[in-house]
Structures are given as C-alpha cells and as structure tokens.
Image 1 (tube, rainbow, N blue to C red):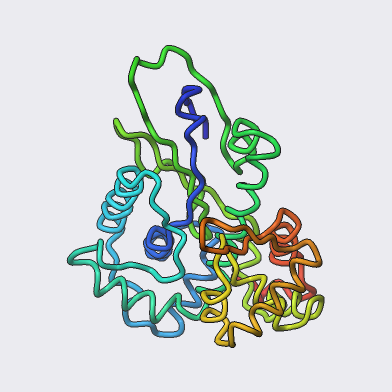
Image 2 (tube, rainbow, N blue to C red):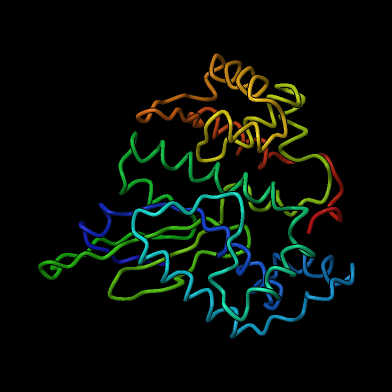
Amino acid sequence: MILSVSARELSGCRFLVSPLLEVLAAGEALCGQYPALHGWRRRILKTGHRHALHFPQDVVQHWIRLVAGQLLCQQGASTSRQEVDFSALGPLEEPVRAFFQECLVSDWSRIRTALESDIALRAHNLAACGVRQVVGNVPGLTLREVRGEPAGAERGLILVPSVFQRTSVLLTSELGSVITYPASGHRRLRDESEAVAAPRLGALLGRGRAAALLNIGTGCGTTELADRLGVSAGTASVHVTALRNGGLVATHRFGKAVKHVLTPVGSALIIAHITAEPNIPPQMFW
C-alpha cells in the first residue's frame, strides 16, 4: 500500500495501541475470508461460541471507522490501556463485550503484549532513526512524501498495530488518516501451543521477572505493575530492579510520578520470543 503524506503530516505521526479497534478487527476477521485466519475461525466456531457469528461485516466496518475517527479527534489522548472500553460502541456494546469474553479474553494478555511491545520498539526507533525511516519500515507500507500542503492544514497520521488486521487504511478525513499494520509477532500469536513468549522468557529470566517484563507494556508505575501481576509493590519493585540492572527496563520520573518503560533491548527481547519458531507440528497453528 502506498501512503502519500506531507512532511508536516509525517512529522506529527503517532503509533498507538487501540484495544477497542483490535476487538473489532477480530470480529471483522471472524466474518471475513482472510486465508491466514481460516484456522483461527475454525477453532472459534468449533468451540461453539454463541456470539461468534453475530457480527455482520458491514456493521463492524462501520464501527471500526467510527472508532478510528475518535482516535483522530482525541489527539494526544492515551489509548494504551489494558482494559477494553466498550462504552463508545452504543448499541453494539453488549454483543461486542460478550464476543470478547467468549472468544478473546483467554488470548488477550498475549495480544496486548505483542501490540504494546511493537509500539515501544517503534517509539525507541523514532528517536534513533527518525520518523521517515520508522514509518517507511511499517510492513506492507510504501511511503511517498508529497508537496504543496495547504496553508494551515493540520492533519494527523495514526498508525495502529494489529494481530488481526492487514495493512489497510481505516479512515481518511479532513482530520487525517488512521492506518493499521500487522504487529511484530502476529503470526506466532496464532500458535495454540504453550511455546510462546511467556514460557520462553520465563525460562530465561524466571517466571516473575518475565511476567513483569511482559506487563510493563508501554509504561507503568510500580503500584500499577503490582496490580497487573497480582503481587505486592515490594515484589514488583524487586522485579523491576533486576530488569533495570539487566538493561531491559528504564525508570523515568515525571514530576512526582515514576514510570517504568521498556528499553529497546527489552522490547526486542519480547518480540524475538514471540516471533521465534517453536518446534511444533504445523497443525498446531491457527
């Protein structure tokens, strides 16, 4: 796909995680005919989830565009939250919530880890390599910079990683464009075996530290991390200290708040373990 953008639009590019868009993308993928997802569709339908077929594709696409429009309107707002906020869906809220609980909740931790690790790594690369190179390296995207932008135009450009969506334009309007692309490791997340990131990292770092690394995501404080892990703040602090000493996590102070974030090495380590090929037979894949 060719992306034509002005220098001004490109300079304001943002990479965001949108949990709500990801759930809607899963619903659209369930209705669609994506060859790479046929195995996953069969697994969902075979288990008898009663909400699996309650998503007319045109309805889902309509709400995907609406949510993408909300991202453009909320410039600067954080969307990398753990929970999925279904309240923006109006009449579709309850069926989508039920679909999430029955078809996605067991995989959600792995999905969120892949999305947030992809964002964290690209954020580090933005500082090191510049926006043109990072956007140009998005899978399936060819960058074409255009001139002659109208005076005063302030269009946004938002790129959203996804496990279920291919590289595609979700929305283009006077406010800008929202584009999805396959998150790093998205194919390995279709693996039903236990040989995925958490056990692999657990063998390398220990289960507690691996869980801490995976749950830091795009950044959090010690108390929030402890809540995510279900441990005491002291235990979470010990894990963070070990990860920081190993160069996998950095800690920054923002006013009175302290936030732990993944370093480029930490992000790359997660992605490497998600994308690593386990020794399992082909039929184990989605």
